[in-house]
Length: 189
Image 1 (tube, rainbow, N blue to C red):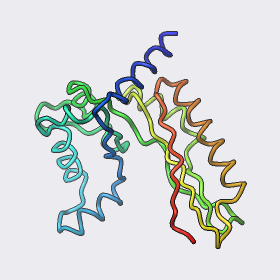
Image 2 (image 1 turned 60 degrees about the vertical axis):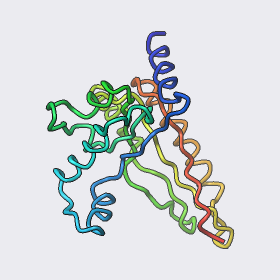
Image 3 (image 1 turned 45 degrees about the horizontal axis):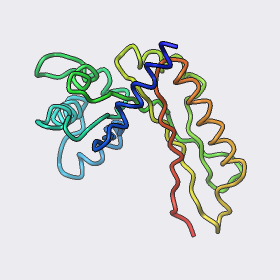
């Protein structure tokens, strides 16, 4: 009952009217590509400083209810006060969350349909993320609509929806409020 109440409290905080969720969950390679495109070195310290600037910007808490973090960011500290970013965010009334999925995997025989990896180790990681201060998680489940390639296949739809359901159950069992994201891309024909 206490865990259910905590999950409901997290959901209510994340869904605060008039505020939004910021996604700061790019992995080192993704954010590194963006940095390099504008001449900024991609290092763990550069990524930490960038995220600190976002989290500690004056007035950010007036507009943000939550922040989705990459696992790297979950364990980084502010140089302002030495506190871990989840604590910095929580003190500002911003709920820290985590991106728990690992890598994208192409389903064989489906013309490019995909699922995300990481369910097999999610319970252990979710417990660690909760202990590090995360209070919710967001799992991305990419589906591409491409009628020429006959995607998504029934297999991809079923696999992704079952994965999302398992992810949500695992997260809730470890105290993380799940955000379920079927990520639909209309990139085909």
